[in-house]
Image (cartoon, rainbow, N blue to C red; front, side):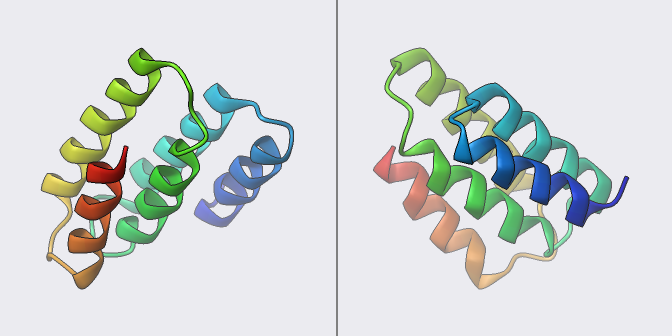
Length: 90
């Protein structure tokens, strides 16, 4: 499957509130992309979606994952700063 297909599936899962599916598809999209600058857009979309989460453990897990992915993204882009701001909002 392509990155675009995983992102599309994540967006479809968002429409029905399937949180696990959303983050699974975004995570897989990032793995397919690799931890390069293009992954920052996918990570940002996932973190923006995470604002919908209500359970503290879910938020904590997404924050931890987001931080780990942001640290691995190279080269660093301006989006990494935006990503860190999104993480702080959670």
